[in-house]
Every structure is written in C-alpha cells, then in structure tokens.
Image 1: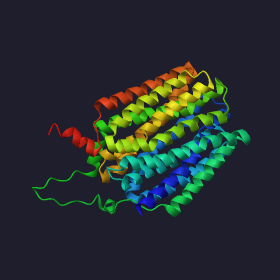
Image 2: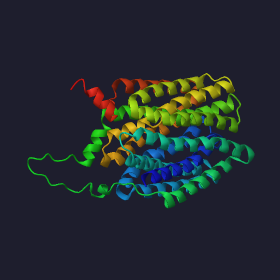
Image 3: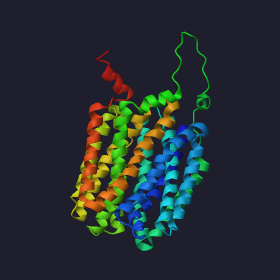
Image 4: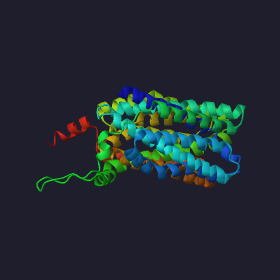
Length: 410
C-alpha cells in the first residue's frame, strides 16, 4: 500500500511539473509583450516566489491539522485556475495578480508533497525516496520546456499557459482519485496535554522543538545552500539566462527550451545516484561538492559567447543541481522529529522561496544596470560560498555516519 501511495504521489508531481516546465522558457518573452524591462520582468517572476514564501508555513500547518491530501487537492486546483487566468491577462497588474495566485497553489503542492515523502520514508531510505520523488519532479520540468517553446513558436505565447492550466487540472483530478492520506494517526492528538509526575521531565512542546530545529546550525546552513541555489535557478536561470540567450546570442524560444531540457536531463540522470550516495555515505559529501559544481556552471553562463558555450553552461549547472538533488530535503527531514516535520519543512520551503523573491527582482534590476555578466558571476560566488560554509560548519545528520563520527569521541 505504501509503495502504491508513493508512486501515485510521484505521478501527480510529474503531471503538475510538466505544466510548470511548459512556461519556463516563454515567461520572460510573454512579460516582454507588456512592454516591460528586465527589472519589471524580474518582478513578474519574483512575485510567484513571494506567494510561495507566504504560503509555505501555513501550508505545512494545514497539512498537520487537516491532512496532506487536502493540501495537494487545494494546491493543484488553485494552480489550474491561475494558469488559465494568466493566459487571459491583458495588463501588468492582472499578470502579477495571477502569478501571485499561481505561487500560492505551488506552495501548497510542493510543501504537501515533501511532507508526504517524509511520512513514508525512514532514515535509512530517505535519500533514495526523496531522489525518486525529485526524479519524477524533474522529469516533468524536463518534458515541459521543449513543449512550451514549440507551442510558443507554432501557435502563440499564450498557448503555453493554456497547456499549463490543462496539466494542473489533470493533477487535481489525480489528487482526488489516487492520493491516500499519510498523516500519522498520532498527529491528531499530538497537542494533547501529557500528565507527568514530579520526577519525570516534562516533554518538550511541539513549538519549542520546532524553534530548536530551525535555529540550529545545520538548518541555517542547509537553508543558505537552498536559498542561494533558488536565487541561481529563478533569478539567473529563469530570468537573466533567457534574456541573455534571446538578446545577446539571438536564440529562439525553442533553443532556450532545449537548454533548459539539457539542465533537467542531467538532473534526472544523477538524482537517484545522489540519493543512494547520500544514504550510504552521508548528506554532506553530496551537498557541498554539488554546490561548487553548480556555482561553476553559473559562472560559465557569464562567459557564453556562442550557442555551444550556452549549452555547456546549462550542462554544468544541471550536473551540479542534479548531484545535490534531494540531499538538502533529506538533511532537513533528518533534523526534524516526526511531529515537527510539517512546520519545519514549511520554514525550509519559505527560506528557499525567499530566493524566488530576491533572485528575479534583484538580479533583474542588476541586469538592467550592469548587463548580463555581473549578476551571473555574483550569483555563482554566493552559491560557492554557501557550499564551503556548509562543508566546514554543518554537522552530519545521517544516523549511521553520525554514529561513526561520534564513536572516537565516545
């Protein structure tokens, strides 16, 4: 039953992310049709992340109180409606409002999905289950950009948003028919008072446990890694890189879609192996080196003078992002006890999605002031620094590796 539920969840996220991937190569060009500059295009992309930032923690709390399945259903329905509205946008305020709504839907789907995987997994297989789930996620993102580029070239930019709405609606139907609840039975009584005698320590409250986790060094450092990679993905890859390809290298929408597909194919090719490696050798040997490779790929984009170099840069970024894969989410799941996991994941997603706000808006403005090279190199530097700090200061959380590291001291 658990395997069947996990596969159903993977199928849902696959369909949902195909829709998201369809619009990634065409969104900057679509925003251009409203007469926007690079800074305003960054705002269009960034407001989606702002909505996710606001919704992640409430989505985690809702998943804990009402269950994971309702969160997925609500999220996919909101996303379908928002995508259909984006196809009808007639001015910038409407486009911003619909992007905000889409971000609210995405936050509930992504947060709810990660919590469900955490419910199903154990510490020993968490990396592999997270990597399998992320593999389906990435396959959907991979299949989308090429289709979105060709839809834009053959029909119109709006056609990609109509397709996005159709895939999101299909995901909503799948959530209603295929997804089973994974919330532990004890969750409903987790907040009940516990009697204790004078000689028994009072158990730590759920809120105190959440605070202790989110202010720990490990959580802060892994969140910094995720934050900088989100800045790279949404601010640089989704905002600056398509404009670089279109306006400097004169690439078409389908060419940029192919580059995004190269990124995601390499993500898929490496993601399961990275999860298996993280389960066997620990989370840090996966997260830190992969972050450095991703930083190198971003720096390479800054020096792209041809379509070939553009594609090689995409390949390097895709390799780094794929190797990192599910390890940060597995690291957070290691840190969070079962009852605190929904809220801890909500905070983790919010920190990550802060990059979705900072990246497009800040890098869009920097691009309008300084051109394409400086924002890409700045992003690469931030990614590399976060990886180095994580390697030096973060504790290992994988149970077996932690025991081995603590054995000599004991």
